[in-house]
Image 1 (cartoon, rainbow, N blue to C red):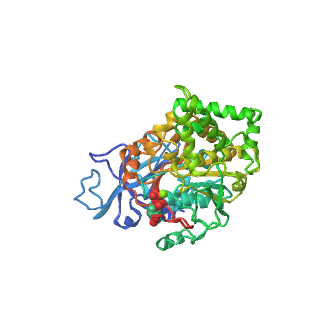
Image 2: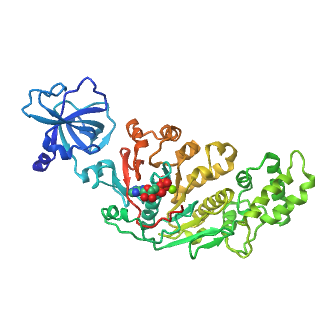
Image 3: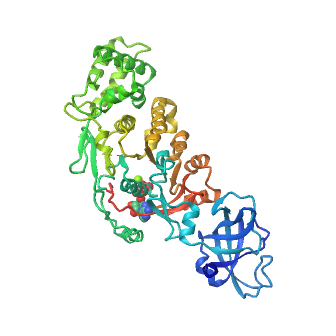
Length: 523
Ligand SMILES: Nc1ncnc2c1ncn2[C@@H]1O[C@H](COP(=O)(O)OP(=O)(O)O)[C@@H](O)[C@H]1O
Ligand SMILES: [Mg+2]
């Protein structure tokens, strides 16, 4: 043990110079320690005081090479060494019972500094888990994993942010692979048709070597299906169409997604009410009953109205349009939906969460050729139905919904006019997490997301972001990331990301591993 400690002894904390700051100290080490004094490396500084055993720190600048006599640092002269290294260490916290916690102190000069073994760093940071995301940046042998069975992680939602090309989709793919491998059902809203080949092995040959370092080989997902909205297409052979049913949506959500005006909204409520009465369907009052209707995906399901009957009613009432009731406006907005061909197709099943929510199954909803309204309605339909199934059936597996381009579903600008959609999202996440329904939001425009949505994402993977607008939105809502870490964000390479999660004791820079399954590149 003592021998091992000695093998990892790097040097000592030097006296502070004139530029000393609260978070940093200087390490003075022998040239022989050069290999272990690289930037981003973690070290332990032994400096006991009360319950504190020492400090956890990270090499942040250097190593700088010095000769005795030329050093400008106080306290370094008079040493017998001719040459030495200096490196700046950033204090990450003080160690109490083997865990780092915030500190108001700094290590004293002369305190011995030790390199940390991979296992020690993994444990100190809280990197152990069954979902292998990648490695700590700059440390190939420090693997970072999330815990699939920890209720504080996926069920408290994931946010994956970063500029175009920064590695978000690869990260989403890795999360999908790892969640599925651990028995989660995963459903992806695929806006670009890039996730439809996940059943094939990755063909990015340059990445195979990196994958092998994690003990992995290119491999496709085995339990995999692709669905697409009626009248759209999917390039995937064997993909199945599904119909959207207008009656499945909350009337206010329909209004918001169609961006109706107030008089159009009144007309919508009036027409829906009329059709519901005409169908003499009892007004469904209890939640379990409404879930049951929602979950009957068969073409025989009893529906109070369809897009066609709603539009016919709006047309019929058009001559009676007034300042308060705009039936004509409504009917032309409904006409968009008719043209989309995605709604109320006879003899076609609707979105069926029962077929998707099986352990280890990954389902992709390919909405790549759908228009924005249809994309958003597919997302809303999925959220509501996955939630309904979770609430009615206790035997469903943990389920992760991956929403790509989340900012186009709900944006900061539109949040005010999308109260009903926000409300649905809020209740699906808040109530769903108790039943292991989780969301992963992916966005290249975090600055356009409503702040409330960030707050729903307790684990965040932030890839390179260059616009200050996008960065500031995250900085304002992610308390546990240091200024220093944020300052690295614009410079992160492809696949690198700041990871902040309740599982970790500190936020870190992560190098995400390449996905083993194939992505379809669409341009
Ligand atoms: N973790 C990674 N390791 C290695 N290369 C990566 C990684 N993530 C992304 N890349 C490379 O960067 C490219 C863009 O990544 P992508 O995930 O499509 O970015 P985004 O979804 O943010 O636009 C990928 O084609 C891949 O070659
Ligand atoms: Mg992408």
